[in-house]
Length: 130
Image 1 (cartoon, one colour):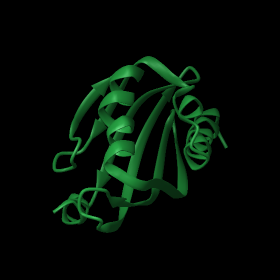
Image 2 (image 1 turned 90 degrees about the horizontal axis):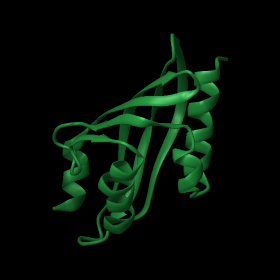
Image 3 (image 1 turned 60 degrees about the vertical axis):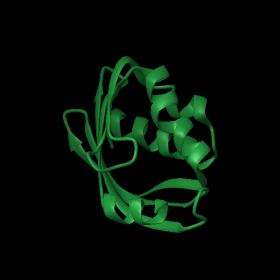
């Protein structure tokens, strides 16, 4: 597999063990991270600090046991890697659990993650929140 594939695989491995520093280790300074419209944290966050505060920090605060498990990684070539997997967790405010499929599209250039775009069933996420 490619260097890009290995970098993204390492990101999910860090996520699995709860290692935030490992998750962001390969982030480019100007990484653009896009949470899709309809998702609770929708928008594009630029830079590691913005992603930690706007996405990871909120997920940890709002959800108990939140996980993003990549069931399959597809090496698209030219620095593109696609992850197919599922989110799971329990929304703290309602006590409702969810399990939702996702697709993540990653962009890697010169050994650094430069982009991330999320696709998922936002309706099922919001049902757990309501």
